[in-house]
Image (cartoon, rainbow over all chains, first blue to last red; front, top):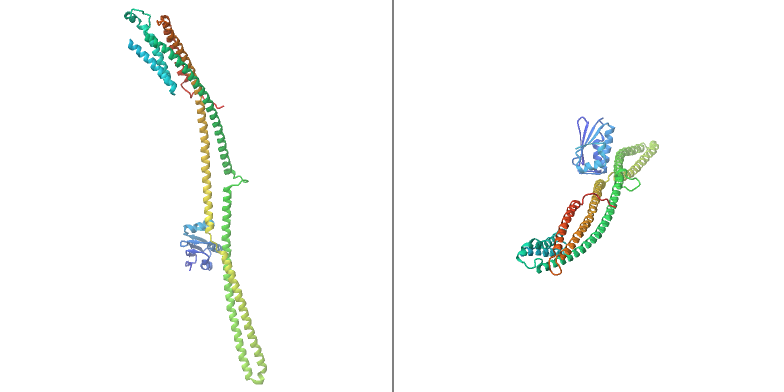
Length: 102
Length: 398
């Protein structure tokens, strides 16, 4: 699986870890990671530390996750992007509406 | 006595030689003066010598006390001629130097004048460059082509492009998700169709059983057998219908698969090129900014340089005052040369045609020499005070 997800016991926090290639091939498993989380105020933490490549569909996935989180009044946090991935995020201006943790 | 005479004659001849050399070589004025002074001193000494020593001489040579020594007379004639000759050459040279200086000064003044014009043109040009860059920086001159603005616009268009791309990806993914959901529903319908198929085959079986029972009943079951047959036909028909539905559903599913892959194609776009372009543009903007700064500072330096050139030219023009001083110096040299001429005449008069010493003429010469020396000293002192400093007073370019 290109995406592994771990939901905390209280279902309040979902840790999503993506593989090296964060692209279209990951979309189904990425969706499955959050699709059935309906706890209000849930926090989705996407661990990008392994990712070395990201295309526009990855950005689309993050946007869809954000929409899902917004519908639950939840929050999305992008964690540990490497410099190249961080560059993509800032060029798409994601840093303006998603929290990015170093 | 004789020895002293020889020294003085040597002084005269040495001075004359020095003067002659001064004509040939471009030596400083001071050497010319030294030479003239030597000639004068030697000449005067020679003239004075006999007078001072006369009593002793008359004691030794009782015969013809007024008779001038042949050697001395010859020397005095030479002295007079040399003085006249040298004075003539010095005068010639003075006239030549004066003309040369005047000509050179006119030329130099002209070239400094045109240099001044050129530097002011240069300053004007640099000033224009500075004003123009400042204008461009301050209000970006909307009508004119502005590279910085162009790059900024391109940058914002690129940003929009990235936004559009991300949105397309998002919408495509959403569509794919919906298609996935639809495919799930379709799979549900397939299992329902299988259920319906099960019902049909059971009905078929039931109709078969019914027709068997009808056959066993004989004549009485004949009508029922017809009904059972009809039911069986219906079950077969519904089975066919189910198969058709399944086929249609399968083809719909294939279409949906095609749709899914098409939409997937829209979802993924590589961003590397966009990122590369964006970085290049940022670099270009930085380069342009630094380039502009560099140009500005250098142009400012150039304009400062032209100011310095201007002041240097002013200094040079001021230095052209040397013409005045030089012609004054040459003028006073003419005085001295005239004195030399006069002395030459006086020295010539000191001996009579018979070779005797004219006492009255000698005295006259002595007095005149003293007078001339005093005049020359006074004039020299006045000159050194007046002409030492060329920097005094500024000169404005005309």
